[in-house]
Length: 405
Image (cartoon, rainbow, N blue to C red):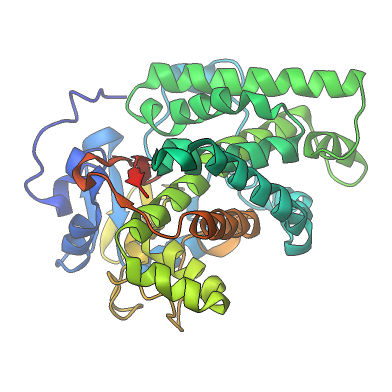
């Protein structure tokens, strides 16, 4: 894979040379997405980062998601894997069901769906609310905090650790590993491989321990005990754990952080939520639409043509759910956050058979974290909007987001 330096340089025409790691695109990708979407070529192509296609219209993203036999999910990361990762230890461990294709995808998804059903995730509401209050207790007297690192980043990692039955006190380590895979590691293959190995070695030790010392009421144990119903292997269980840690942490903390970043700048929306608490479900969907954090890749299985684009077997497609969710053909005033938006068929959680299995948990975490923040800190603002830093590429969201209250 080419290096960050080799892929640097100005972008003159994003329809033929976009760069998802360009600092300006990472900070604010929406103008570039709009430029591509409204051009004569709404499916852009770039040779950077191993080459990829970039559909930006809602209908195109949804159509590609539905054609899972042509546009496969065997590699969903936005940049190619290094040779070392493809050949090294744990090379066969993926992240099912998000990286699975039919027919295996069907049982992969069926096995974990009950864990994320609405009634199943509801039991985490009170503990998540308690966690949010405990986090705010640590900084509320100071009159300022980092809404990203002090709050948003701290919530999903502890919820996921609780579900998996692994130590919540390792939250900072887990977060570092996830950032190594989905943030720093996207442009640094060495960091990405090291972080991936740390995650998988940790979970291998957890699997080995549970085989020797059976436990109750944690997801790893439940998965290991599912062999009577499904062809469960250690590799599959490792893959699910990998998915839950990597995909379940960064995505949700980015959504929480983006929402707080927005609310810090819109007192009218804070007031609207206080005055109309019944608005919360609709507001959560709108914040997810406007600040969708995730871009997923697909790999073209065989030569095909899509919307006039000649795509070759092995080509990478970047499924930009953020771009799709700002398409004016699907959403009126797409760049405006309208908390009571009535028609909102967003694809923040994807579309088709690979739609995010953990969406109910993510919604719960986002809602509770925002509700508790506004209950405790009803008035707040950005200390310096220009000082907010962002991550991008695979997951878009603020990392440093200092606020005063």
